Length: 111
Length: 114
Image 1 (cartoon, chains in turn green, red):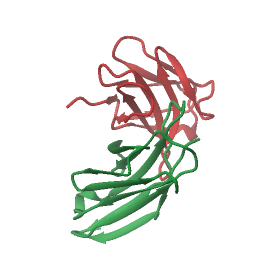
Image 2: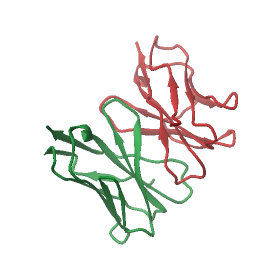
Image 3: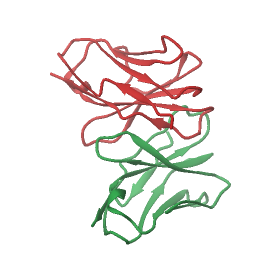
Image 4: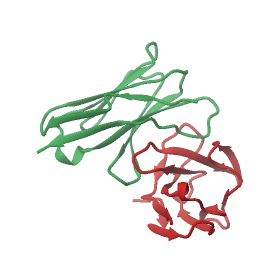
């Protein structure tokens, strides 16, 4: 299955700092998605980057994708306390009718 | 903004009872999913549904589980005989078109089996 592995498992930063989370995967993909989950809530789609893209921006989010290394990173700039959540990557491709989530990165932004 | 809605938000049931979790996906979406998350663990895929049939299911989705789209708007997950280990958050999700696109998740139903 196409499950991503996020690193680090936990990250604690101060408000205003940047946060970088990484994702590695093992199989070829069509795209890779990032999701956020606030504690006990549903996942929220953040951004999708296609396999032929190297970088994508959305507001304070910047995602990179390196298909040769089978890795992606999510950068959140100027973090806020409200960014505190778990972040998951979901590599996607082939004929899979599902997204598979790893354990995620728990980001804590301290005010 | 369109959203996936799930009811109830919390359900408590006796072990062995049947439960039905309900979801209203975003209209005009074509793919529907159920996921579950046991407390403190990762979000696990249960089943995907397209064109009125199951597209893919996980090992978790055994004979005690079933899904149905009884009308044009609802998508349900039935657990026939609940077990203690079925206690979890259950999330419904939908996607607008073909696979490999973003999924929109509901806020979940917390199922507690006692």
